[in-house]
Length: 196
Image (tube, rainbow, N blue to C red; front, side, top):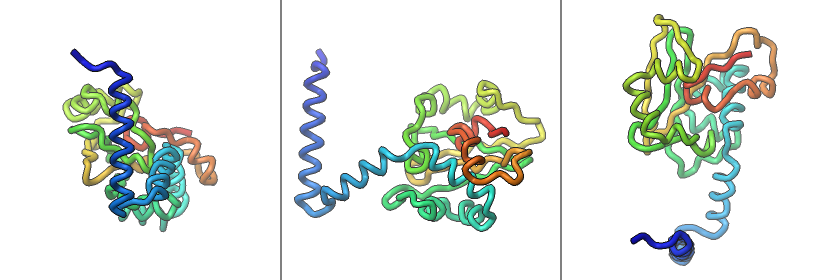
């Protein structure tokens, strides 16, 4: 027989308090460190990644940094990456499209995009992304020409991934704020493509 939900929640709360107390008593983390981590997690959302994408579309030096070292590019935008797995950025081009998934669980660049959407964590998405990636994209309304190479890339516990989508045609002269408004979470995973 399973325990009532309120007892499980009470046990979880007690465990959290005990672990927090141990971390602070041992000097591993301070209460301020813990509060900072909670605030950082709560503030993370896809708008952060969209701002990075828009800056990469308008600033060639930043784009080069983003593709070379995604973690440094995030930090250059004021996103706290200390203690987080490294961030790899995959550039979509006219002839190559990237689709990010986590084949084992739901490893996701939370510091950049926030918490993963429910479908990203589902076994159906994870297995089908590997088995039938073009079918997955078609379900999202993304149909790529046969000439475009599709690469499925695993986001792992050791190395998080995000996509730098191809900048939409007709957006020349747009500022970063206007460009960022075009970028959706799915564009940075590779299931969708931004459009003007």
